[in-house]
Amino acid sequence: MNYHFLLCSERSGSNFTTKLFNAHPAICGPSPSHVIRAFAQNINNYGSIKKSKNWNILISDIHDYLNFQLGTWKTKVSKEELLQNISEKKLSSIIKYVYKKEAKANSKENLFIKENRLYNYISYILCAFPEASFIYVVRDPRDVVLSFKKSHNNPFGVIRATEIWKSDQLNSIQQYGYLKDEQRILMIKYEDLVSNTENELKDACKFLGHKYSDKMLEFYKDDITQKNAEKMKEWSNLSKPVIKNNFNKYRKELKDYEIQYIEYNCKKEMGFLGYELEYPEQRYNIDRITTKLKKEGKKLKDKQNEVSKEERELREKRLKIIDRILNRNLK
Image (cartoon, rainbow, N blue to C red):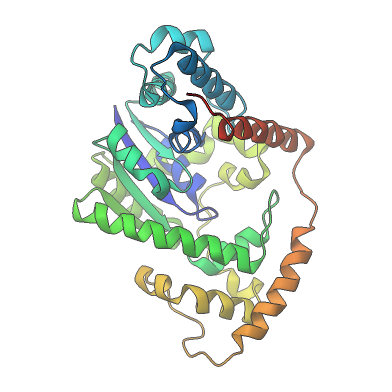
């Protein structure tokens, strides 16, 4: 079983990318569970998992966490199944069991896994999956900020959205440098992925050691992908073919001062990633712009969630489980 991981900021086409690879005949790209992120970063909360009591609690928490994940999978696991089938008491043993089961249910031999903020626990990934390879997808921060503003579930103002993109890229670019030197990572621009999908996928498949398949362009026809697109409002575009012109929307939908703020704060990272500035010379009052955006951000924060009752309830249950994980204090 080969493990491929996606390094990508939120609102940057991460689910789209995952579903493209999921449509490959040999690759399983399940909807994100974020189970690695949730438990790898908090494994110390469980003390010594060699102790049966602690191990059982970890198994129970992982089971409950997966039971309330946002995306639908073909498979589910029970607590009894995990306890009976995993002999080595390691977090990676549980994670591999869960993902391998899903891959086999889809008749696939390889996995493509999306996890948010992968850079925070990439050392764990490299230890648990020593042969792992990585795809790094980047997107223009101006379109990312616009996407955050329009989010149905958790809209952010320009300042917060810019902070997220900048932080993600500062950390991701550093990891990219380490992994690129070892030929373990490939960078893809989201804009190229949607406008020149086939060629970008051919290069990515070659890098990952797979032969390109035209089936990848039919990602939206997958039954589970269709179900998840209907279930989660933020994923609705996954039920459609590639939207070739889904970039540079900021030019029509963001105000000049919003673009100026983003470029002022992200100039260095944008330069590294190859994104040109609309305002290369600073001829504006950034302090006044910041004050204006803070006021607008407060108004946006009060915006009512635009998701279904079912989705809201699912997210609330999930947050309760995450809170339980964060507050474990086993010895």
